[in-house]
Amino acid sequence: MSDDDDCRDIQSLLRRAHDVPPPEPGFVRRLGERLARELSATPSKSEHLPAHTLRLRRRLWLLIPAAAAAIALVAVAVHLWPRSEDGGAQVIVVATALDSAPAPVTRPGDLPENLIRFQVACVLKGKLADKFITTRTPTAAGEFIGKQWVLLLSPEFMAGKHQYADCNWIKAEAEVKAILSKLSDVGSREPAWGEPVNGLRLGLYPTDRKGDGKVRLMAVLENVSTDDLTVNLGLMLGNGKKQLPTAVRLIFTSADGKKRILERKIGAIAGRIDAFGVPLAAGCRYTIACNLTEYYDDALLSGLALAPGRYRVTAEFVGKVPANTTALALMYYWSGTIESDMLQVTLPAKTAKQEVRP
Amino acid sequence: VTDAELLRLVQTGDAAALETLYQRCLPSVWRYVCARVGGNQHVAEDIVSETFLAALRSVATFVPASGPAIAWLIGIARHKLADHRRAAAHVPGAMPSDVGRESSTFASVDARDQVLVVLDQMPDEERQVLEWKYLEELPIAVIAERLGRTEKAVEALLYRARRAFRELAKTDVPSN
Image 1: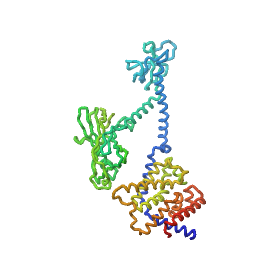
Image 2: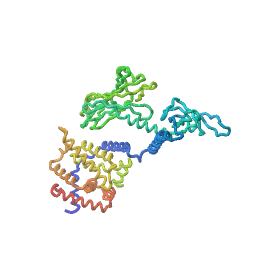
Image 3: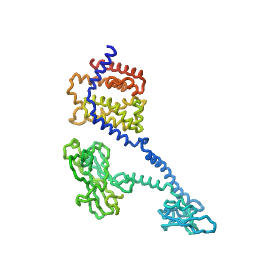
Image 4: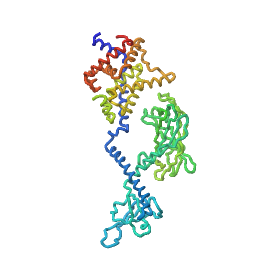
């Protein structure tokens, strides 16, 4: 057999073995789009983040040592200063500079000085009954106002002998606050879990992921079994364009024991309804953001309109096998009812309709 | 641009490189998977999707020195195929994945399986170069570019691949 014959023979065998239909163009397009979405959503690809995001990220990393240094500074001030033999601070406070006024001249010809009024935020060492203190400084007042300071108040200051105090500006105050709030937010994200039923459990936690001060409720379903599950979260409209997790509802209990059951608003429906089926592989979680403006009280047929105050809130998930017969409805759905553990929240007075605080 | 270079660009988040790599490799991966599930397009779509998604998620683990990018992708597809077969074996009443073969004669199905068995025994690079050359009919220059090798090296590889195919097929595959 010549080389050409050999090649033709191999080609023929390969073609017969791979006589398969080509992929559907729709499939090729959808998969391509999904891959592009996955790529853009992959967090590790920092090289392709927008420049301002990269700058923010770098700044955050720089702020961590800055914040650590500031905290260390406070710690050193608190722990070392009192041990010195002379000039040890009798009282150490964290205070915010409120306003200032020119200080009266002690001796003619002295440089101008300022009186700075501080509001005490907390006392780190010693005892101080006053909520406001005033110090005297030659430093320009503008450098003080609006910032938080660590003030080291000597025994002479406390005795009223002079008004000079050692001021250490918490330079990374804003950064420290941001980092602490992020840390507390991370800490608060472990949901209040309810008891698992047939391998599924429900949790609830508040979060402030948007950083606007408003805390939202997040319901989390977790498959704690070793088997894969599918849950029916509610319904989908418009071929999945609108997904309504109606199977999760929130139960608010006020301080006087009154219960309000809030369910997800549906609105007008025109067209086919599909099951909101979510596969939950063993160990996986699915989080549902519960925006309270989208929930209503079924008993009152009205919006949330809860009175301001403290509430205990739990989430409840009622899993049902969908009634319709779409392909999703053929899945093996988890069925039953589970509840999250209880969470304490406060509805503030001004925006009780949509805000909660942990 | 070689496939490996494209994968390196994908590692840095380059969407255009991903698109190019996807368009290049999809025919090979599709053909590999679809032929091994008996032409069942639905099953093939699932496995090919899983393959590309898994590849994208673990793209950082790709080491160019370990072989061509397509071999890496086919390796993932092979694992996904095995996963699919394992899962199908545990589902009572599940349809065998080789539906779609009804139109073929028993003899041709047998021969096809034997060719696939032979191909599966070959090194990934040799099998791939055979497929590119005789199924996709890519010019040697294009194959060389994708593999990042010279044309001479690709011709040598192709020669070795043909010889290996013949050696392995001697007893298994009926001659055309």
